[in-house]
Image 1: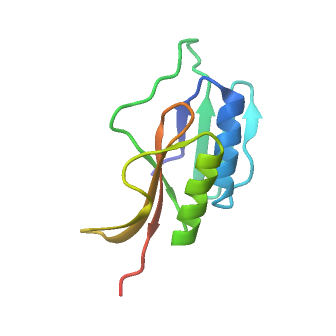
Image 2: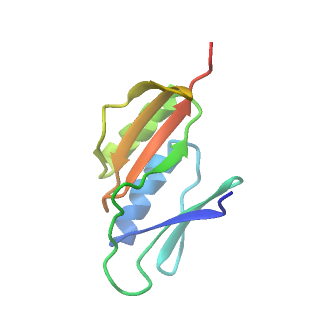
Length: 127
């Protein structure tokens, strides 16, 4: 459904270091800088961060979350730890299992250095 997701940043180098770490924990290669943007490319889509083209400061959206698919509960924890080690802050409940109509999920939430809310999510097998 999506070709890419792009969020704003006010510090491209800091955003690259943060997302290289958290996406690296998911096996995504380091981002590639293109002028005022950084792109992390995978076979299933592209994530990007950019200095705002209009020259105004980047701001975060209230109520928005970008979720990154993880392959295991351990990968969720590694993703969260990498984020904390690279300038992210934890938000929501502590990382762990949550149950809902869609089954059990192992989740972790972070705010990136610019304040964007992101999530590492592993859908646990039913059984």
